Length: 132
Image (cartoon, rainbow, N blue to C red; front, side, top):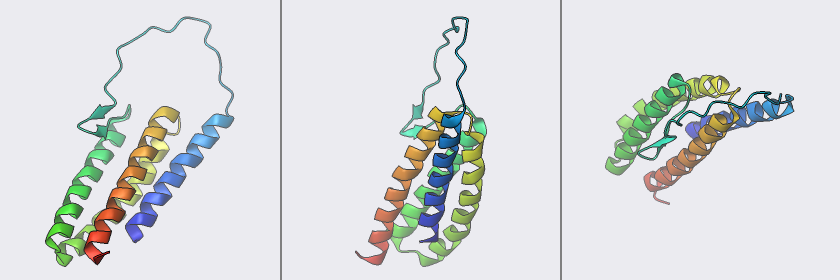
């Protein structure tokens, strides 16, 4: 349950950062911007971000989800206890990741959407663990 609250807190921080960005007036460029090829935004279902630290955070979160899923499927409560600490660390790092995206509303939304999807996935896995 703590993990769910941590994920929701991260989503809240990202949303509040997005709102603050929306309040800042946008300057219209006077020159035509140079078009550069875009970096793929999704790799194997995992989004990528302009900030490499955020991409590394998402990779760590994917590793956490994989470990969580394995622990649920094997009903390994010792492993679940170990994952609690990892979840707390990820929650702390998630706040830092969200703050790094404060100037990139597109990336912030992408991270918020990703975290929302992962929160749903964790809730479904938790239901398996509790037998619901």
